[in-house]
Image (cartoon, rainbow, N blue to C red; front, side, top):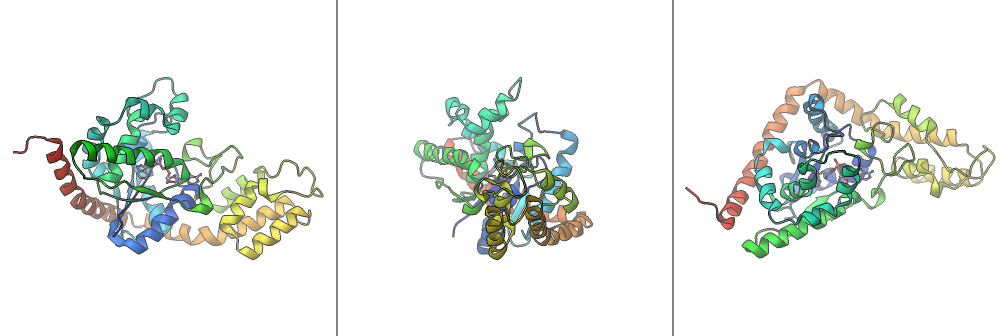
Length: 332
Ligand code: TYM
């Protein structure tokens, strides 16, 4: 049976990019593979970038990321769901992997280049980030990794690390494969400024738990086809991010109506955005309701995370034991 692993950083509110790009696949694969699908809030990754790490908010954001995933449909009694720092084996394996990973490979990672460019002083942990990510996946010998397209390079490096380890110490790890949602490889930010990203701040994101009136304020001013200057100008949905969102939230009939309406100037941008808001309301309201119920019962969330960490450790410990033995550490 395949083993699934994925992680999500508690660096801010989860947004519709995380949701459609990754979280919906967590749910789908979770329904298929049960406890063999392992998901993790990666707080150790979240502390590597001083631009987004806020110690006072980390615990709360970690908790809320768990709530958001449960509200989005992940059932902690059916899958394995936990917080990365609660399973210390992740760090142990990551250290071993840093000794197999050339610094040059780490410096080549585009996410590292983007993030380090913004910093005056670059912490070593930010450079080591992909070795920790490889450890997350391989600690469970996972072979299936649901992610957005931006993680492709990290998964490639994970495969390389697995090959290197196997070559040096004998066949141990599978070479994991990324699983994408082809309809949501790289969801654009609502500010029209490239990919939607938690670390780009609230101007870029539509949070899955964000109040609908706040979402509307962002949609209202979101850029559309720049060539459509007046209401009477025909527009091109193919270059409009509102239409990209319609593809995620609207049914086929609505999609065809707004597509034709835009091309013939039959529908204005504001009305098109209002139709989108209706689709978002229908989709997100049940998630908001479940999140409210979970927040009202924090003990349920804490117990689920404690149980998840127990289950994760039970899988990880024998694999870590095998690794220690193969690397050659003295056993007492
Ligand atoms: P993170 O927290 O940035 O994002 C979580 C997931 O959401 C996907 N994603 C997107 N997909 C489509 N469009 C977007 N605009 C968009 N923004 C984010 C991401 O690709 C990701 O799948 N390095 C990872 C966390 C991680 C991890 C792991 C993932 C740590 N260890 C092991 C998989 C396996 C990250 O920063 O995700």
